[in-house]
View 1 (tube, helix red, strand yellow):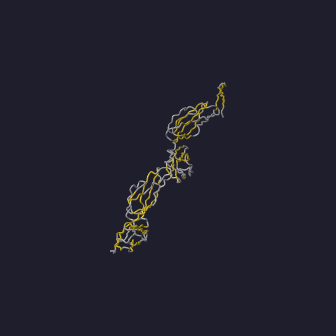
View 2: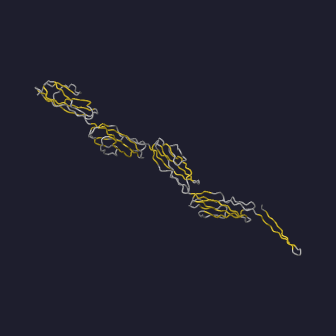
View 3: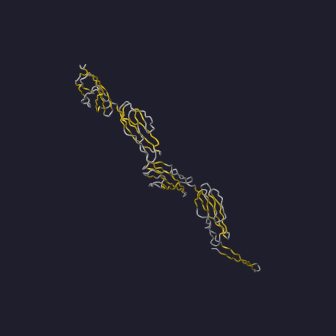
Length: 392
């Protein structure tokens, strides 16, 4: 309890004479020092201290004195005021400052405050990506770090582009399904460290529709013939085809010329069979698509109109294709036509065996046999019938 206590002293000598004096004792309640709450601040930022919460119940605060007692040294401005300040150093750690207050009667009291200097976290929203429409996409913030602590929280938000639904938006690696529309999507990642400091970075994703590869229609070609493949019908709805790559995946090996072009070519082998080629196209965003085309190599049929003959005037003559054949299939049609000599009427001109009646005059008659195989390849041969009066 504060107040003034008065005491009187009386002294008596040996002659019984007395004398008195008084003394006053002032009872002072010491002040209350309040250096303010502990703070967490970022490197290089301005820090304000506050001792304004200090008080004196029986008088007034007459003086403030701030001193640093721990941590990286700082320069205090206004160290003898209630509210000094300083600039946080570029080194993380704890700085301790002590406030001593003195009241109007000279009593003092002290209090400490801790200032935690925190380095901002380093945010990394991952590399830019190009993804396909309707594909599963994973964002990656695992490259984020904190130089003097740890990442305590992740928060992803989409800031631009066709809206998607983020799963795990509060994790380092959220995911979503790319929209069915090409364009760019922007996402912002904010990380918070264990001292509450935050940092934000963005990442842009390009949504790309895959190109459409078209290796052309299947073909039927003759052995040893030149063959051209065509990928010109390939397309990219949201860009352009930037590369073509043809490879042979089945059949007798051949050498492709221009395998990196839209229209390569090769010479068909002298062997029947099916050759399969794959075309892979790449668009200007790196997406790819493939298509297959089959080229059937056909050996042509062998037409044989039979040996030349001698025939007697007005006699019956037979033409035979019996020696015709097809090395890799069957003969599907026969056509006989007269190409020279006195005209005659052919019977069975679309059959393997044709007949006619020789004219009544001597001379040479020429007939052509054309056969088609089951793959529509053609071959022809001729036969000469010499008509004489004797047939010899």
